[in-house]
Length: 623
Image 1 (cartoon, helix red, strand yellow):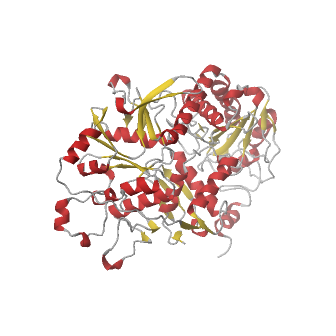
Image 2 (cartoon, one colour):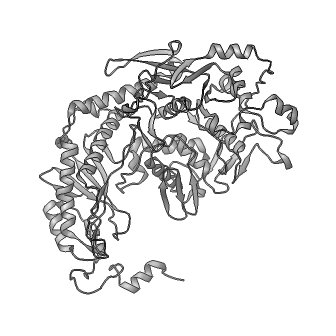
């Protein structure tokens, strides 16, 4: 076999002509396109002439829009430069990525909105939200409409990353480091009729539509609103940075609206539905003076140690835990309802995850003496049970550096949490390979300084190991620690044995195992199609954005390309190196010169979770 698909189409249609091409002539609908070196760009008048010249030619003629690095098409009236990396070769291919650069002098942003990285992230977030909203209101995200037939106009829509309720570093709108230029990265589905160029329509998009979008979203901003946005983001991140020093793992603001619209909409529950504002128990109330606004914020401080969240069904236990688990990202957008609900940034939600892949994890603290002498000091499986998956998730979280474990009884394997006296009488200890989490939670706190927050609705035996017991009653939070301890003192249950957790074995990542060996796609937030395998992140609950999953897939590919790692290197070293690359060069380092506006930065924890779930034997192993 020789040549492959590329040679087949070259022989069938002629070099450079594309499918359906024609070597001769340049008539509308049949003109060929001969590839040429990337342009050095020019003015918008030059861009208009170029589009007039390729109008009606085969669709690959759009490659003429591509420019060499650092060059583009300058719009003199608006003052921005439009750049294209590699344009799409077919109207049915993924849309073309484009970059718009707006110079500092044109944007005229106040220096106190981008003088450091956090301010730049906050300002970029503010501009992204305006851009996304304006794009929808203008209808710029709608495709051309022409009746739906083969030769009807198609494409023409502009798409930009959809922001979440969190203020996160992303690649769609950025402030150039140390310069103040604003960089916008979006996609444009280049318009076509059949598979031919619609040059006039393309120019209409590049000139009028894009100009109007930028004018409305980026030039007509309220500077006081921008500065308020930056200040509230800075104050939330400052508050998160104070938690460790004052002995807290989380803080929930008084007055916060914790309930969400639904399980698929993270917006705040509408006020007409009368959500109950959060109010801290007096025994746990803490106050902070915020440095940027000077305001005082008061709420519940969740101390380091072992905390249980109890209460009846549908009374708000899991809602409070979700506010804690999503507080790891620090800042929420103003108006979210959960502003100043912040958590230790290393906290990890862990759960049972039937069927997941596990590689070389030492789960022997939790599970040992399996039938047929199966080794649990270096445990691997392609189909983990509820208990082995939960044990693996806990051990992996500790390996990744968590200082706070978050659990919900509803999503845990019950036998991995607690084993009651009656079951011990039926199944002797030497016949049960599982040592439950309750036996180790004290050792995790004492020996590894790892706190635990757990939602509990049925296992009262956990009261005996808890430092703090909260009760949610109709979304009102009470400190029930003294009542819980009284119950323990009056109980006839046997004391809970406290076992030493032991040491965590650091594992090695084998770079060659992360070569995609095919296309990489992110069809949804919880799934990466990675060449010939899939990485299931649906149970990694602290991934809050589809674009985080896209970025995680790019982290994996960056490792495969050799960035930040030797052929074999400890997992934590690999993650630190990749994180350092993004710290120094930004998210664009994950897709150099591709103008990729679809990345939202994940935490190191979620990237590590993807490494741990790849279904390739030997990808991760012990030293």
